[in-house]
Image (cartoon, rainbow, N blue to C red; front, side, top):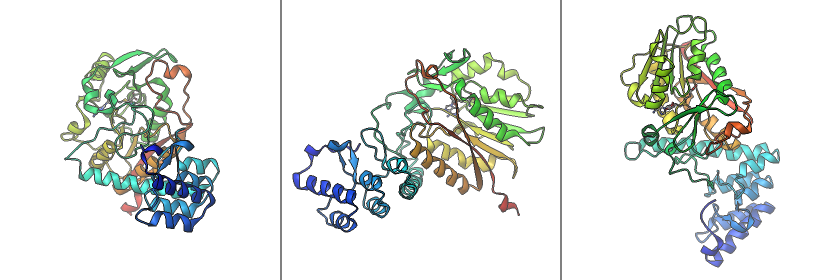
Length: 387
Ligand SMILES: C[S@@+](CC[C@H](N)C(=O)[O-])C[C@H]1O[C@@H](n2cnc3c(N)ncnc32)[C@H](O)[C@@H]1O
């Protein structure tokens, strides 16, 4: 929630903010316009700490006043502000089956996120903000989306790719399957067997129908689950490149013999560095790293056109961005789709209902996945560009 307790506000401003909330509740568009217009007006972003942290947007969304929702968004309402229970206005609309209002907030979220991504890319050289997707709170801390959260994970290694790569990993028994899982130094789950179904779907979306002597690139070894799935194909890929940056993950891969498998090239480097010298015409490319967020995925996309072998080549990635909040997850799905379109790729989303149990999260610092279904993408060059 925005940091503004009622005690901090002068009484007249507090009164105007409360009036705005009441006007939003009853759908008085004219009164809202009046309150928001004047220089001394109400704050569209203000959240009432005495009312569960609701904002004017929550009230307007709850009552289905779509036109008012749009007005508030134009006048500074925060599209992804959550109340004290963690609910955004869009989720309130969704729970009322109000698709129109949900859509209005969703569109604004996509617009703002794309804009922020663009600005961030321009400012990239000046400051490279740390970000998280896997491992960190699903509430992103990278400036793309800032939703208040009770969990402060900024001190954890998953908040910075460099800090993560300098810290130790442990490969330990997974309590739900007995096979291995990989944890970071803070107990963040880097990779675990519950994701095997997701990896299997991704591998089959990428490789079904590929030519027998295909070339695949996997970024991020983790437990090597998707790599095993690529190798299990008949015949296995003629060329199988794995880029992995963490020394402990490389050691684990070597222990499993990945450095000696025929056709496999195990590259110990950050993908950001490895791609500079990687010769590649890949038929399938998969991206799944850790302690990186949407900004890094977007940077990776810029390399994709050079990596893909041609119109039939495919790309996929682990979409865990905002994996604890269905609304933000939807926004990221759309933003990724638009960014992929920007580089000439068309994306199909396949949904999967992953199975997790209580044991999946035993001994783990945070449950980074809490949604019922995951969106698994497969992208291919827009065929209409070749006609
Ligand atoms: C979630 S795991 C990948 C899991 C894998 N898909 C599997 O099936 O087991 C993420 C991996 O990405 C690696 N990684 C993190 N940052 C990286 C970077 N900048 N470049 C390359 N690999 C990176 C981590 O060390 C980790 O091994």
